[in-house]
Length: 378
Image (cartoon, rainbow, N blue to C red; front, side, top):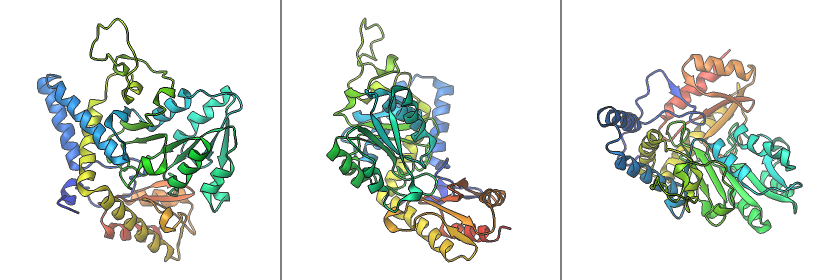
């Protein structure tokens, strides 16, 4: 893949087969080195070179803006997590009793709890059950009415990897003046993403999954045309327009997305994620996406050909993602998962089965070994 030395970047110890990027991903070697260099600099020089740290953070914002197709890095806020970003939106909007919003019933708690917490304001949450529809997008649209203020979806559903048609949903929301919120944690870094095509109003994603970064650093993008509509509930020196003037007698929220960053930045996390994204940029997100989908296709075909395994993920080409979930026809998923983990095949128990999530660098022969191991579990 271009000039990237995959073996050097991901020297994972045998016999480990890492198929859990949808949970917490391993770092590439360059990210470990960035962390080590940052730590050494702190030990030897403290914050003497702080301006260089700010430069890394600025570069990270630009990388993230490029990754999602944002017009400016000024529109990128850095948050602790997807949950924090979703909470900023959920409690920042001016809700009225009788308003409703729409979710998928199978959402990860991060994209469910912040919205459900609005019940005390009289906001209704409407759920779409993915197990009861062959057309999720139409199902979401059918739940919309004149009181619908927002639709929040995952670009890729975490348990079985269903890829959402964001363009179709974004157009439907735009036509009805409904806000569109996208939890992109299971696609950013794995598949191409464009905020302009899907008409999103909010996009958020942790960096520790497909973007190969560390926990504690997340992307948060708000459509700059509606940024002022989000009421701020977290305050501190960093979120002000006058942040560099500590003696300013008055303050105003920053005009940029930094208004959502209340306190001191996570410079350690910025250094790691910046390095990780540099790898994805070198390979190219289109090439990364093609490689991820090729690995999912191989897994799906191998599972469908097996008499012992049952594919739970949707194999349709436009529904595929980096996630492949399957079950053993004779074993409970918890038992299958534990046996695979005991063999150093790192995966997750999700969606009624075992979830494999291979990244672009995962060797194809390892996927075959993992499926064979699943077949041989008893």
